[in-house]
Length: 171
Length: 465
Image 1 (cartoon, each protein chain N blue to C red):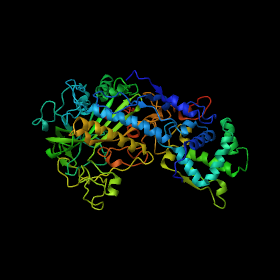
Image 2 (image 1 turned 45 degrees about the vertical axis):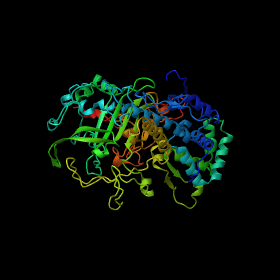
Image 3 (image 1 turned 180 degrees about the vertical axis):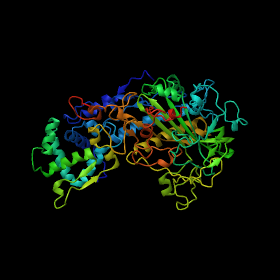
Image 4 (image 1 turned 30 degrees about the vertical axis):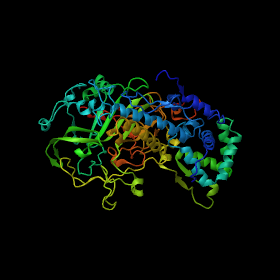
């Protein structure tokens, strides 16, 4: 993992790309005030796994289409229509999994000869802040940010969890 | 102050965001934390004033500030709020209990304080659920009547009540804190008038009142330049002798230990001179729907991990013996049972402040700067002021919240710093493990009344009888 501070503009690009890939608001992935700094943690972790060169190439591919709608960015970078996604698309997929699950799933191209996927939990913050919990309007096992008795009420809308939904999210 | 032109950080935020590539993802409106902060062009400062700040005041952010720089700047604003709160709460009071503007904190070295005229929670939640009175009398245990004089405070060791977070069990039921003289540390919790009034007007002082309460517990929020919100003050005290009085805020109080069956000991009460070792201020404000948590300690309490590793230790501490090796005195150990606060213990707590700010270095950096500023001010009033011997550990604040209202999808408001512990109150839960280590907002978010209803970040309502 890199220990050198990553320039803010790089992290902003990484968060904006991640927002398009995950369907969440960029301001949730990289808040205006960010004491947890998951975007910095995830950027550094991904670079340590796939190389700076591969990450730069992915971000450059994003920058080239950054003005496109989020769905187009996601379909392009993840190569959702391809049965055999490129190494770069596999990295993008691992980044999506990292944001949602707080774990790093080694891209398939790095797994040649290894049975099954190699999974690594990034950190305790990554676990408690996984987007999967927000998308489920829920919380991880062993950690709840909600007040006592929350289970007796309908969950808050998806939009309040930061999900980019055109209709504001249902229940 | 109110006439100062204000700008919102929302504008600053969007100014910054204009530099970002516009994508579908970035066009979404930013969350509320950008809108809630109001910046004053002159910026806030620590001041010698008897006025309790109703909320934090924010200075303008540096242009193109990085995340770390933004956090450092706003942490600084909250730390200034904390110091201004500390100064105002420890101001000499007038006859009405509010700060007397004709006097100054520490002008005579030590002084009576505003917060010590707040209502002790033991006097709010009375036997039988009787309505409390703001300036009512204090129930005096029979064992204390001989030494009691009107106006004298009673620091009680509250008996073991499983559903109550008592003062005695403040270090979270994991054990008492015992000073280097073998004496148990004592605690008390007090509430200010707005908090008291909310409890009284909603009949939350009794179990019966809580049972019929049908709304959401929502204490009042303080307003910048206006009224203070609900304030809780938790204090920790150790017995001191006359030679130590020049370094502590001290009070002569009655220390009461009710009788116990396990271990068995009879009730005991005695007059003691106590020195303040910890002060924890919780204030609900417009910018802190999850409350703002300011925590102060006496500078002689404990060394840090770095002090121990680097050998930069003081000659003595309140809760650490520098002459005892780690092998002989392992740090941060819970005292062995039985726990009998009526006796002098052979066990002395060996407490070290764990660095819980890894990744949040802006917090200790800011606190150190504000502490230096505050000490200069306080020593300027009187070089012998006891108040210069207290330090802000940090202020915990929500980075993502609405005005006096949490955001449903982020009820904790993503606190900064992520962890914060006062070694006199959260002694044994220092660390960086989510939901386990000390995080004021995260822990208090679990609080309920005696009914299974959330109690707006305070455990005191569980004391209702």
